[in-house]
Image: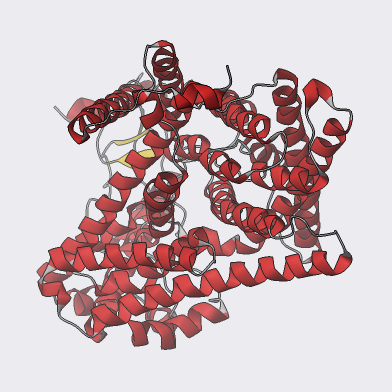
Length: 617
């Protein structure tokens, strides 16, 4: 009996109360899985288990529950937990995109923006073409009874070109992987999803038309127009919110302020989709613009509320999506499994990923060498870019619009490829990081910037006269550099840097950063906010200089010390006899807790302390 005839005899609840009961059970099953995934995440993070990630557990748990629902009698709950494209694009995806833009490490993102655009635009286009051509060649021989036209093959390739490395990025975030690599992979994945959606929608518009050169150029122009128009819409929504907060007193009602900001951001996504633009691109740049301009106009309560609300909704959505995919691996009714097609499609996307990463990386590195700059993408980073090409829920959601004779087989293959890539590539990321010897434990200045901004606000309030006191400790050259340095330096960055090495001053600011600081930020933010930010920057810059000088004085003292081998302890290295010349160099700096002659300096774990652990008790 066919699936259609089976659906015709399906028992559907007639009473609304009965339908509500089954809906409650279906939601309870999904909520239970979600709570289990979060508890698993808590356990894995507490035990510092890196071999497996929570998203892998979520998919596997969803697969088990989906199989149980499939084998259980009745189809009502099975129908209710099936994948719904509208729920995914309108409810589950927006919180992830908004939080990604709002919490984006903007400095590394825009420093690597050229590289990110290259992979997101050109790389996605290459991956779509390679996957589509290989799929068409495979279907040409009619294996397993598959018949796919060239246009459907290209649509299939464009859908599978959407990468979604949520698992890998979550591991990167926990391990604090190299910031430059993190920025490239996260930025490419965010823009890549939007590019894949626009590309697949553009190709669908040519269904039933002949393939001519004019249609190809028309499609490219339509694609670029939609992408940049969506970006402009997102920026406009963000600066509208900034101006609205600047010229109103919403900060006095923080709950209303947070609600309006969240609704305006969500409205940008809906407006862009309604105008046949890319809602993902729009929402991404809305989040970036909100954080850059509107954030300074918010009250402190709203800053905290938006930050944690967006993070919580994103966390719930990500876990729910992976559970959703695992459940639907068995509960979908129009599945048509073709094992060879699934296996070869997985091979095809790996080949396509290679051709979209390695040649472009070589070109980017050659450009850097020609400009006299260091290479941006070493071999280890290139391999991680390849490994981060796993597919996600966006690809499966786009598959619902596939047509043609083998549409069911293509949809099933996409779902299977998504699950396989998450399990294989996502589950082995930790080990690959060790094999490729990629830097971990690298804390970015922006990681603690928000907390330090709040700390700085309180410190500035407690010490309103610190400027006249602290700047008197600086030399005339230091004060001149302070006055001439108008770069937008994050507060967290002012305190970063290893012990003994002065925190490097930023180079000449980019022309847009200077323009932004001089004209755009004063226009979109409140005057008192600008004065407060400048005060905080000066406050933390002063602390930075004092830390640098304290570190340098310690090193100067250490270099002049003589070692007594009889006093070397098992747990630390002790030093004596600070030379008189070292004390003279540091006495004039008026630095507290500077080691004096005869004091014991302990060097351990990369830090210098004024006394040994034995004296701490």
